[in-house]
Image 1 (cartoon, rainbow, N blue to C red):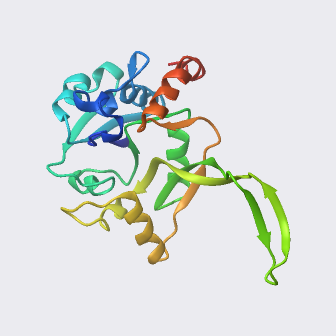
Image 2: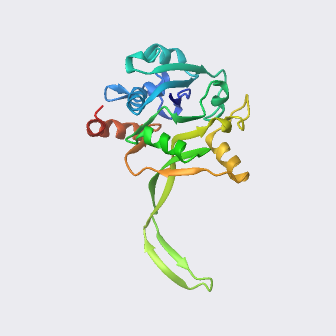
Length: 235
């Protein structure tokens, strides 16, 4: 049974005032909450059991999604009594399978979650991170200078590509044992810990659509993009 843990306990402070009375995962993309879109995608990708890591306004999320039967999945809830970051909530879930997917509950993407999960399992990875490319626009003319102090190259207002984490990961259960209990511990902490101990982190790049709706401008873009994206996803 493929299992996914969805991190849905944040307060959505960057989206206020929208999130004063509504949990961020229930923010509607046109007429469908972002978390419902994720649930539909996961169900279609073969994930049969979903665990929601909840905290802020947990009762509203539980009332909306119930046991998940409406979407053909089994949904359970893990309640945080304090803010634990993105990775420490996993220590509260005691029946995780050998491999599982973890993701933020505010992501709009056309990524195939099932394929991402299966590759993680087939490759025998401990920790797999999904990534996508972004461009950083430089508003100045960039000088590249030789050690002698002479100009070697010049580029006017270049765009520099870089990879960012999509907030979607696959983990082996043994990784959870490395996460400290009863304290905030995030993705950044886990990555730095892996790098320090020279453990391998697999990175899989996604070249399609991805958006984190955490900021008002990104939420508006997601709303604008959804009519076409929903057709492509057949949702």
